[in-house]
Length: 268
Image (cartoon, rainbow, N blue to C red; front, side, top):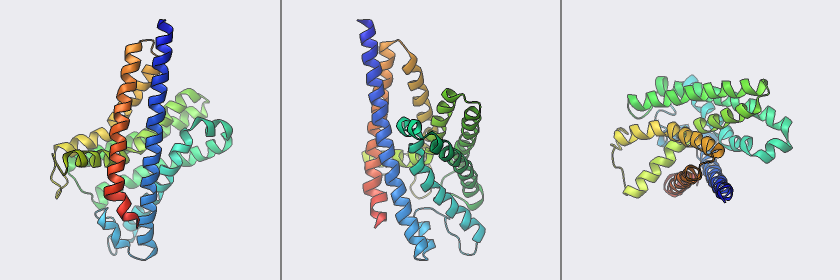
């Protein structure tokens, strides 16, 4: 009977992870579509200054090098948001191993370059928010680069178990900014406006918390899932699955709020 309870708990955990992944992929591809349509249209029509409607200091007249770096960062964002989930899906990985290896190398390279360009945008070009947010975003970039190096290191050693763990960590860290946006829109929706921060300066205790949570909470939940997937403690497994479901609900609400309130209107 105890064994049946454990199996049932593990099934619940697998369902929770699957639902989370589906919501995350849908949300990220909506975001990618928004980036393509908004920034792509602005660039194609010669109105690069429209970048600044969303990305402060995104386009600066006369700063060719800086503008190119920002443009590359946006292009890499599209590639990594669309391609990332394809690296995680087991069916694709097993059916097309050669493609998985090559796209994986590209993904890791893009993640690394994207981190460097992100650091440039924060510390050289300038970004909204305070020093705490800038440090947090920079730490997120460092975590991306560490995860990228570890993922490819274990792949070369053919230690695929550790490779997959680090690849998943990389996937989560790479999407830190996306988690930030989703979390912010969830917060704005449930509070019917900005609470805990000044929308003019984009600073405040909530944004400090969110800038740290954007990579720490997904990492904690993933580590919790890893432990739960190996655990024989039914209560712990059910608790982990329940937390993941709650996180998924919050994420889904945030995706909906971001799509309706921000991404969707800018796609036109």
